[in-house]
Figure 1: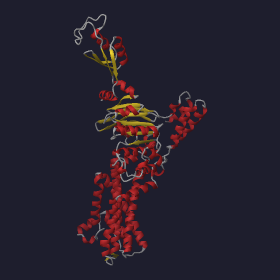
Figure 2 (figure 1 turned 180 degrees about the vertical axis):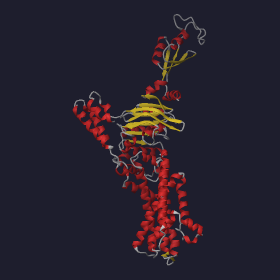
Figure 3 (figure 1 turned 90 degrees about the vertical axis):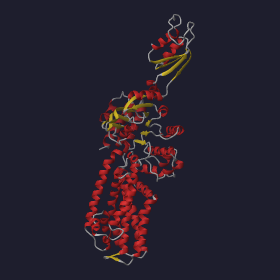
Length: 288
Length: 334
């Protein structure tokens, strides 16, 4: 609909400029100018592009802090807790495998939460305002951030699984692939969580606070230690944390059975965080 | 906009500029923050190709106006059109771009990557290398933004604004934080090459910047336009010129400064000249110290002629800086 008036415009201008060849110079320039106005097009997909993904990924990989939390920490934890539990069983699951999936979940969680929180940080830096002066749609921008964070989460999964394989903990490739995929899928919950947190907290604290919150959630939610070691009340609370839901779903392919409520848990949290981000984002638009 | 489509074809007598929509058209633009009226019924039209300075003290409503102009915020009342389109549409088509005052850059990207990033979000944009060269930052393309100086960052912002090859560039205090030389360099380089043929609107509170680089100066205070015209006119509007001259020696002058000498038939005497000058249009004040007369007037030509006619010597006319005009007009407007 938006292109309709501009094409009409250039069509009506054209004869006016060619009709008067002698004095056409100024009107010819105005016609070309109007043509150039109507030739202008907004970008497709709201400005979403591979270049953006590439540059955002480069930024992630340059950030040492992100790399430590998403790759080195899960890897080190695995080497400490996973390797020592090789051969042990946690219920019906191989303990090392159980731990590796849990830690991969944690890595992906940190990657997506910090990625989401960065939206708000960049808003405080004025980058969002800069982008608001371009055709880039806010949704395309947030989507780029989320995809890149999930890609980083995938790297974290690969690192932990590779370490598991190297240290002699074997599982069928299909199981690992499925489990990895579930880790990445459930990490979308935390991307939304990060966006929401980023908007609600002062930008300079957003990342720090979010990694602390994630640490606590993971500890209670059974990503670092099995739930069973906690007192009963805490165990009950743990079932309602998003970390529990994500971990439980990611470990489902390992064959130890899983809690169906975990699916409800993840879906509800996703809905809450998406709604929360949307609300925070709308509340915040006055500040562009 | 709909009437525009048929107008140029039928109305042949109208010259070409009438066919091009205004680069900027603001009508009755208003915005308040709580009780504060930041922008108060502002009307403004800018023709394509004009270089316009938006001059005013901090808090005059410049940035608020620019925000609405770029579609970053919504006016409480009034309308904004850029080349006959709503601002967001003009932005999405790359018709208008802007250089921000501060911030708006990511420290962890290089200069080149920052330009690539911006380039990627436009449907069509100029070549990244070309833009880097035009903004004078091709030599630091691979430096990270973190390591750039304030001036280099500003050039980078400028490079980003050039990318979509916009018809209108809006610069919000583009040289804030630069020293005088930096400012001069910035403008000379920018105007020389990159900005030819573009419509430029820049906000500034540097008076000399407006004076030197704009064709037209719009003075804002209290969210209103208090003056609008070529910078020399703006200056003339409020700021009178100072005319000073040495009075002739009168024979009958025992007490020069008293001004009570009434015996001035042949030569008018000091008091006579002062009376005569006081009767001229545009005179604001006359001050006599010894034989030196100093007056402020908006019509310096007439004053000078009168002084010459009465044998005054050493005539000096000094015009006021834009700063004087600025202070005089903005305090009046507020």
